[in-house]
Length: 390
Image (tube, rainbow, N blue to C red):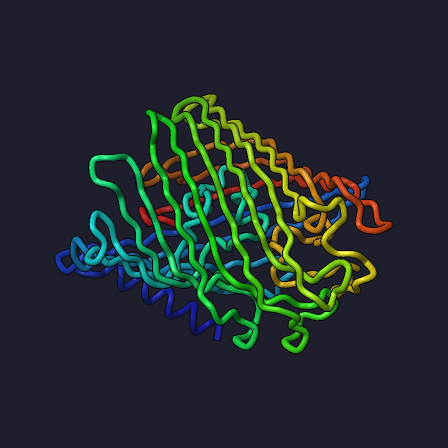
């Protein structure tokens, strides 16, 4: 099956390259990340591996000035997978017919919440809302995107599944009510952008020790807000974002009952452009999954579902290979640099070398378990071509 899909992908890309430019404006693009990642805790190596984190192949086509679309496949491989894997990342159509000064976008697309949709991965860590699992980078749905005439501002409203492009579950586990997101971005003064985002959705709640369909204990609301500001567009820039998340989990006191907790956090991300090719980046994130308690949201007495001794329910973000760090209040420190070897179309990086040091510093214990800081050293080469927006 994988081989068949890969052959179809190659044929699509070849056909795009051979398409008659008089009929439309086909575009082909790619984006690839090769990474070495090592995790160290208490002078012991927890993980050390080379991976292909992303292997995007994109195909875009414009039928006329008001209709265009894009499809993106991700072919990736890592040591914790069975060989290489294949997934669909984009499959959307833009229709500039129904939204004044804007367009409607239908299909699998970026998530328009916080800084997720325009995050450029200038640090290896994801944007805040994506990193802590509030939303996934992409989702299925319908989005309305527009601007305000004669004013530097843009807005979006989207109706989405709310689970992202891959929740890891079969259809019986999927939420049956769509989620809603809305966002507003505006430029109050030159070189400054301010934004606000809102999310409303429902989510199934499962027992900590069992995430099978029969263990569902509730279907509860979740709500999130994001406030962001970005200043600077030259040698120095600064991004800040505050995130609030009211979401359901299995109760600490009675794991057979659902309860809502309030997570809060923020990110501060300065970047200094030393030369046209060399950027120094730094970042500080704070995330507290339950601001009203000094206890972890999961306790060892609640059981576990993985061989590492900690639960790994589907909503724990993929960046947290050891879920215990996500269940406690923690700080994340990032420092590194980006070296742009060459550029590509639209001014995007063509070939970029990235080095990041990252520390996850837990501020709480889990029951009697004390967590040590986890240091990661990440070396990544990214290369891309074409003018598609990934």
